[in-house]
Length: 287
Ligand code: G3H
Ligand code: ZN
Image (cartoon, rainbow, N blue to C red; front, top):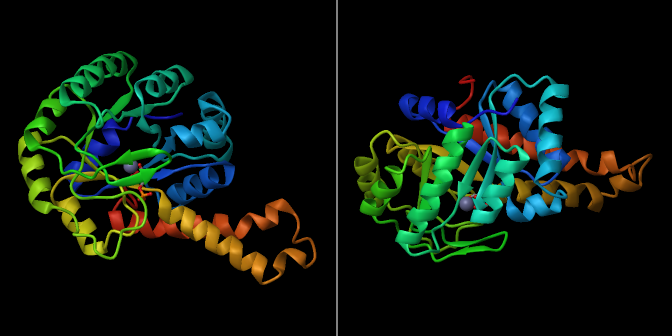
């Protein structure tokens, strides 16, 4: 069964490692991530953006696929199914559909409105034993239509939102969705440190995990980051492996046109990427 992410993140924060959130798009993505988590005995969070939820025919389809796959693959590690950058309406739909965790991203609202909406959803999630992530400040760039300006979070506002009883808090610290530009200034560890001091035990979430250098990941974890979201990197390796397979003409050899064969190199590439990230984040063997 799916789990509330609270326990895995509390353990991660106390143990100075991070749990990866890997976004899913379809059956291959889901299978690759679940099998890797099981092989490495790592807890894992499957992220579903509203766009990906729509692509997969709706949140109920996602819940059905993920829960059945956990059962039929014999997955024993903790798996949370989490709405990524959810709207207020999207969060309610996911709660209804059976997700075990949601993110309400109210970062584009004025802080009072973000707080009011987050507070209401915290109440609902607590009653149903679901985990909930909130966002303060914003993540730069664009992900599936969610656009952010990338302003660093105000540590005071982070405390106000943490005090609402959210399970985990995403704060803008100079991180950006997608591939980082050449002239990226890097993460603001000063901001992160100030946020962690204000929010104490609260597990902090680092979005935009794609392409952040290893040393910055390590430092972020040392300053209280316990969940790291990775999406674009899996897409890049999937696309590249698929392109190579086709460009090498392998799809024309034997039964290469078989869709299961066409999708296999990309699926293997996602597995390798997820393994690399779980090792980097330190979640291997923590299930
Ligand atoms: O919400 C998802 C993540 O923040 C993913 O960011 O695509 O830059 O890895 P990324
Ligand atoms: Zn994000």
